[in-house]
Image 1 (tube, rainbow, N blue to C red):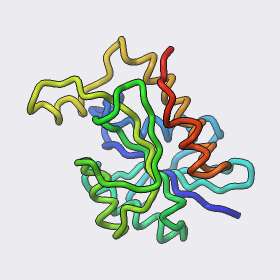
Image 2: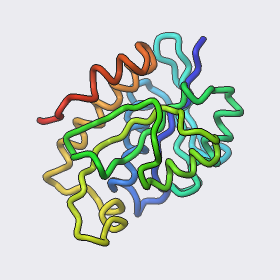
Image 3: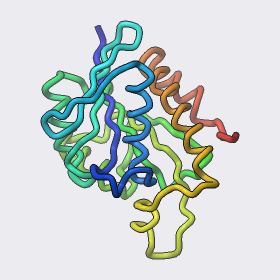
Image 4: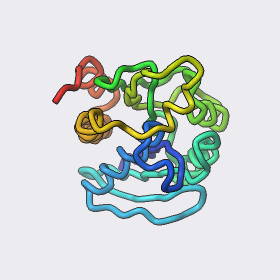
Length: 192
C-alpha cells in the first residue's frame, strides 16, 4: 500500500487564519474535511490520517511556524517512512498570479522560508510541491505584509474555488502520479 505525506504550510494562531501565507493549512483542512478525517495534536504538527482508494495519506499542519516547517516534515517523513517523492508540500506562491496553480516534482525554494527549511532538513530539493498562486500585488519592500495579509472580499470566491481544485489535484497526484497531475492542472487558468 502506498503511503503519502501531505504537508500544508502555514503559521499557527488565529491571527494568521485566512491569510495568503496560510493557504497550505486551508487546502489541507479542505482535503481532510472532504475525506471525513479529523486532526489531532501530535509531535511538531496537527496530524490527520485519511485514505483515498486504498492509499494512506498522513496529513500534517506543522506547529513549528513557517520558517521551521522542515523539522516537522523530517520527523513525520522518517516516522511514517515516506520517501521524498511521496511528500507533497502545499505552499503559497508570489511568482504565480492568483488564477494559477502549479505542481512540480522538485525545484528551488524560490525565497520561501518554509520550503527552504524543508530543503535543509530533508537534504534535497527533490520532493513535490503544489504552489498556490497568490499574486504579487504589493508595494516594493512590503512582501512580508502582503503574504501575512488576509484575502480581500473580491479574491475570496476565487480562493475558495482554487482550494477545491487543489484538493482534486492532490487526489490526482495520489492516484495518477505527478506527471498526470501536472498535465491536468498546471496550464489551467482558474476563473469563476
